Length: 386
Image (cartoon, rainbow, N blue to C red; front, side, top):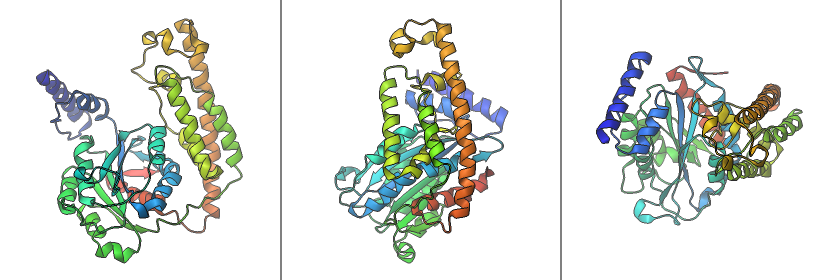
């Protein structure tokens, strides 16, 4: 079985090499799920971001910024292009420095492996809480490099962002060893010190970024996220309600995932309307995909077949319907969604222009630190922004 799998992977990479001039490497994993993931993704282009957050007692402000600024970060990444292609986005999440975690494993935890499920990413961010701790930066970087499937596409943008406020040298694993492995894997390590810029330098956060070929940044993690309300916000939020009505849940996870979507709408709204607007814009972008539970997104997937649907998979309004009737219903919802998303995007262009005119300074710490670093490093791989 392993021989067959290895042959499949080798054949795939030779095909990519000949047709796309990509210098992909043969996968060495014998795990079936890993091989399937490689086959599905390595011929696509991705921005892969591993976010490593310190969740010790002093980091409540950092976690709050991550929750509040997720959607603006996603939106900024949705404008990225490389050779006229819009790359996909995957985000992984780790927490470290929390005394509630297993000390034998370095007081760290993989909260979420690389995922394109933006609702799940939001859910996991909102699940984080602070406690303790012992912050082992080298160990969490090394763990993320070994556990995550970074892929072999040389055109992917592969980034680690580690944020915290204790010396970068803590723990048994040297940050120098970890950053060396990152460079070998074509992964850039960016460090975000939560505190004074010079203190971050003296506690080796800048050295970690330099060795990882990334950016060193210092932020005020206790600064509250600021928003600029625009005249277009109410219209966008009204369109979000219409957008939600175009989702057609199916399968065993359908209802649960639709409930999760509503829950994350509410989480965004908790901060204020402007944050809910940012989430709505994300939901109108190509990065918001739900083909595993939504028939409209599945309908636009090449691997989906209506013939595979069971009556038990369907929502009540589609039960005992013929395949043609189901197709017609989903097609109508798809057309409705396309119009709504386009309207949201058009309003967002006006909103972006308005905010740019009104915003006197950039003071959203984590968001600006990440976006500035991503854009700087993306230029090296010929990315551009709309």
